[in-house]
Image (cartoon, rainbow, N blue to C red):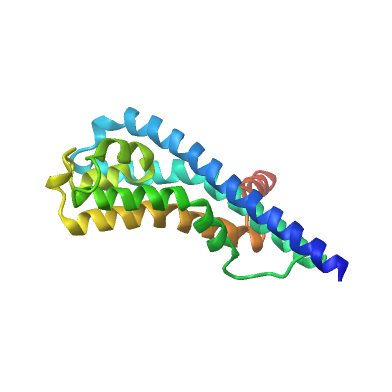
Length: 195
């Protein structure tokens, strides 16, 4: 009985520790994405988006993916030793809980379209730099009235879905101990030995 209560307390600590790590890695990814958005802003037109969108998403995803990969790997190890039970959607729960500030900002963005809040397109782009190029593809203006309602809802959805999806992919990869970095490094070492 006492061990069960202790495990529940530890699981709550692990949950909130992972949620805060996810949010901090999201902020780190945003800083990286903002730097590259400003640096690559000359490519924000024409076919330049075909290079900028995947580049920004890839650069943003590294801190989020690696944090959630570590969480998935840690949870599998804890489950193997009987400290917790595995849940297939734990990565989604971690990511959604860590995305609560993003959800609040996205709801504010939608409300601002209907005149309930001020026009904050530029701060919204800065706070969601991972999808900044996608926002510019949809509508490159800084005036909220120029956005269609469906564009506002799509942008709000993408700003929440992108971090959650990247976090879930990282968590699942970690829980299956699938490491892209290890695959690339060991693949190159094997190729060098054959030569």
